[in-house]
Structures are given as C-alpha cells and as structure tokens.
Length: 111
Length: 117
Image (tube, rainbow over all chains, first blue to last red; front, side, top):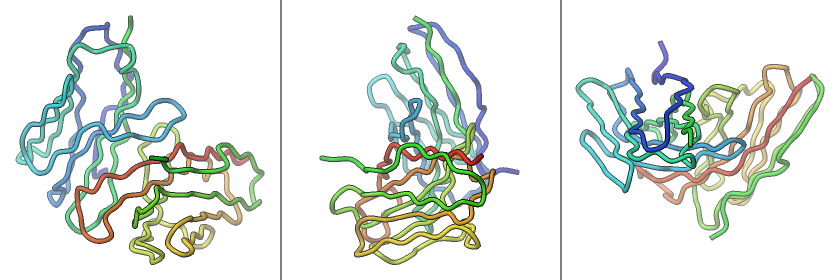
C-alpha cells in the first residue's frame, strides 16, 4: 500500500465549476499537508499549506485536512482554464523535512 | 528573487552511459533536495542536503547514483551507468530553514528531463 493515494484523473470540468481534489494517506505521523500545482514541463509550485487538521482558504482555493479519516482535500471555486494542470498533494512528518507526494491528479478546465 | 536553476533541461543518453545534472538553489537557502519524477507519478526524494552535509539519502540507489553539494551552494547529481528505468524528470528544490522547520516551503526548479535509450 502506498503511503499517499491520489486519483490520477484526468478530471475534465467546464469553466466556472467547483473542483474537488482528494488524497488519502496511511501514516499518522504526517503533520504538514500541502498542495502543489504543476504545469506541463515545469516544476511544482506551492499552492496551499496546512498544519494539522482544519480548513484554510486563499482566494478561490480551500484546503481541508481531516486527520481522523486521514483524508485531505483541495477545492477550487470558479475554475478557470488557467487552472488546467496537475495537482499534487504532499505530506511531511515532523521527523523528516522531505515531502511524500501523491501521484497527482490531472485537471482540465474547458472554456 | 531568482528561482532554482537547473541544467541541462533535456538530456538523451544510451543505457550504460553516464550523465550529470546541475542545480543552483535560491541564494541563502540552506537545504537542497533532489527528487526523481517518473511519468505519471509524484516526485520521489533521492537525497537531501543541509548546507553541504547529507541529511537523507535512504532512497538514493547508491550503486549508480551519486550527489554532492560543494561549499553548501551548487549541487550535482550523477548517474553512472544509466538504466532504462532512470528515464524521468530530475527536480531540484531548495528551502530556507537550516534546521527543523516542518512547514518550510520548498521551491522547485524546472527539472531536467532524462531519456535513456
């Protein structure tokens, strides 16, 4: 079993839709939860960062962490064609500073 | 602020040849990471440096991969000899925190795309 599971997609939605992206994990030591966005032939860039459980909102993006269920989500409101990219969840435990990534979900927002 | 620089951007070699990648992190960043991203997968950590010391190389295939970070700044990752399964994007990242800092943001370079024929 992988430490972090993420549906690879692709996920295709019309412009303006609400998008929900999710990851599940097995290691209860993970305390830091991040979402990265990766455009084609580019490196990942940090979108959202959450410590422990709870919600965090930044503009059109909302990150949720449910540690009891080992489940994290990223919501994108009013999705735009420019949001078309691969979204990677990344988790970190308190011991290591390296990230454990999900496999990424490819999102396509149709104009 | 300049980002993480990597070169070359693309490299094609034949199996059993050797190859080297170079990374220049963001100025002042103490920690440097090399990740391997195989097509359709998330990045996987190969090695992590704090200044010029190795913090974590548990997933580095040491029989063929080596990395160094001279003077705590630039880093090189080498593969010798390359195998077909080494075809991937090699990403370099850096972060500021010299110690601890679980939530320290990692900044990624554009990566080097390696194809082994």
